[in-house]
Length: 95
Length: 477
Ligand SMILES: [Zn+2]
Image 1: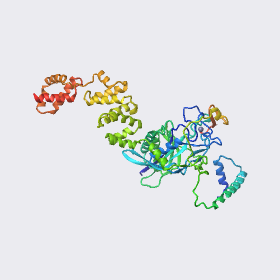
Image 2: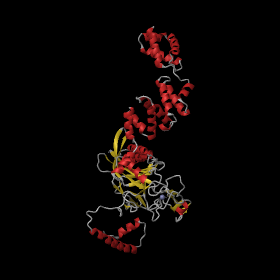
Image 3: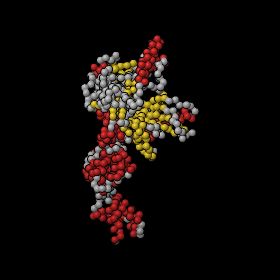
Image 4: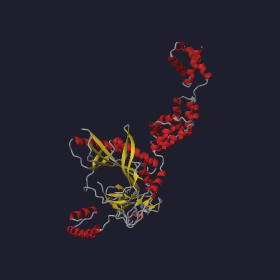
């Protein structure tokens, strides 16, 4: 897979990252290198290997439906950049 | 040209577990903001989600109730997008390996039975709640991480009414399973609708609009009705449809296009590495299947078979779990094998009392045994059916026993022959003309004479007994 500037731009937008022109150039190259490195995997024969979605051979890890002790609102809001009473406060999102 | 309407519904159900999907925060919507939260549901770094056993079992119940195939291998994925009500910047959902697929829901709509396909039932989590203030939006994460089920229908619905009946049927089944409150106004059931039109007979689907923001079943129907006419007009005018999301404005009664912000959505789904896969084997499915309660369809079949109800009557009674339970209690207490009478009372006078009071059958404040005793008074002709209906109303209002109300209102029918004979003698003397017409073979004359006796007795004479007595008197003499 080749990474062009447009792809990097799209990905940056999806991640809400603003990139300068020179960064775009640099990152396109770096991402291309990373993907190239990972691409080595495609040389392996995986015909007999089932697709995995988890790295550990474990399944069905569940918990009982029992309440734990929650954070207090003060604690929950402690690191909030902006708060209002017991609410997190964010820039207004609808007109 | 004639158009065919094609509708598919996406329903989100909040599961009523004690705790959230991936953490032990207790679910309680009355709580003060951000008091039911923890590092997991706030998306703090390093927190590890673990799925709720009860939620999984509820989800499997729902999937089984819709006859879905439970997938043996299922996993959670991350659906990535940014929104302030989503603390992790992704929602844990299911993408390519959902819990279940290929189910159906049978509906009865516009006098037709129809099978509506269910594409999939999958697991996900709710987001937080936003409150929009003048200069800021406030976020409460108490709801973030509440377990949701998404039930996606096939585009098999062909009218707003069918969509409405599908939702009613779905809610009915969930109510029987008791896994969600299904209250659209309170947000425990949410519904988005995809709707498109196509020329009748066409195979390909038209361009669809996705409708959001409906907060009642009727709202869904109204929004769809509006959309059918809006899209029909566009078609007629030869305009092309654009695929878009439209918001229903219940006050104005129309849908409004949401401006398309950034082109096609790209959620970059990928398996959530924090959660393990689930292998749902046959023993597990069988075990949960064994816990399923009797569902509306089965109950309906049993009501018709065991109690001799018509399919129509049974359908009415099973349309609410609690009403069905109330009805069955009454039917079982009613003596004898023939249940026709009690059923007629339930479907007739009791249901109209409930409708009149804008309540449900099971909410009527009437003691089951007292109801049976009231019906007994009609059966042994102590009171007339007409009086019995009045007694029923008073029983519900005052919760007094039937017998007390009957006595208070002096409603007992006179079946006592001595008392009736006196009245009959008087009536015969006063109506010589009718007496001779009866003797001349005119049956109507008998009806008239019975009527006169009823009048004289202030409606309390037992008409059947009176008829017999007059007949005997006049033919013997
Ligand atoms: Zn939590």
